[in-house]
Length: 95
Length: 488
Image (tube, rainbow over all chains, first blue to last red; front, side, top):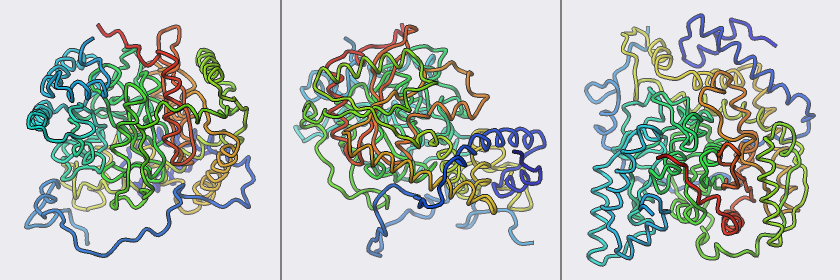
């Protein structure tokens, strides 16, 4: 199998990771290697098998909707890389 | 015998009987750490001051005759992906290099309630992604049994610290074998409980349907003691079970449950080191001599476990790691970007290591439009087939015994360039995570080169107590767990 270079660009974009050209080639080759191994799953007939996403028997764990003490705003802001006037500071988000 | 060579329970007895003060224990342990840490590098952060202050608090309690906790005076190391309030928690990643959590993980809160003494945070593969601790952004950790070899991973720092007598016990996390594999490589006892037995609140998430906090200890009794403290319901982890926690310490010597041992034939085929096979065969003889019946069985879908795991773990990881955006906590690229997506992308490019990037990319690939059914959905179906194999096996046997790993500890640098080869070293362990069952690794021999060999015992969901009893029997019949690496 192979992965189209445009596909790598798309995955990098979805992943929010900037890759340079050398990294794109390197990761593409490694991903292809792993995906070729993963194709082993095609040996199995799984048409009538139900998927499972969790192994725990728990379902719909509810709790009372009650107020509980929370962190002070400054404790949280102080661990952020940049904040101003009680808000997180980020680059422009609207053109 | 030096104080640092004792088990956690040994220290606890001495502290309780006032033969030694907690402050003396901590001072002696830090003397040991100062001698050996430069070579082993098990820790990312050491908190001598905090440990001494907690120790003197417990000494005061003892002095005034107050009741003390189950782990009173025991210095313990915490894997650095478990949140500790006001103590750095980095996940061995540049992206969390300066992160100090404002809260404690559930398990840390429990440890402190029981008067344990936190001595430091241990090294790991970045975000627990790896099997050798070589993926740490800060430094590698060396195996105390052979300092040219890896300690395993991802909880390699915790395993090496316990093995080198630089901690009496440690917490780790196990997503595909990250507690059991390093325990096997470093000759200690590593226990991954049932999914849901221990709250994951405060464990920095890697793959949420697979992650579980586990223990690294010098023997089985210590594992039972630590598990007793960290188990139990927590409303802050909605996947945490409300089932009662049994008393793991009472009847730990009971042998009534050592009855039917299943041996999956698929685990003893090609790829298994012959010395490890022999050690396992000898171990089974010991069980047989003590009345166990060994039953050959098949787990036909286990050969698909690594492929299944690769897809599920990376899919969950790419979602969990989306939170590192350079906005709320952690690292942010210093370049001035005029656009937020560029800032995200540069931050993540600069601060994630290659293995983390690889898994995020792979995760997004298998979840993206057009591939979801071919990969993620398919893997989730095969996961069900693997689970059925175990459900079926456990109708015939009480536990399943296998090697923990196909090889002993490998050399530093040996597998780091081949990601797939590294994933394959979890071939016997990651099934327990896919199925959610508990598993322990205990020492069961040594190679001719002197490296420890681990035996894995898997049990049914929530049958931790039975596993501990089965493991304890082996420990009583052998002395592998008493061997120490020669570090002097």
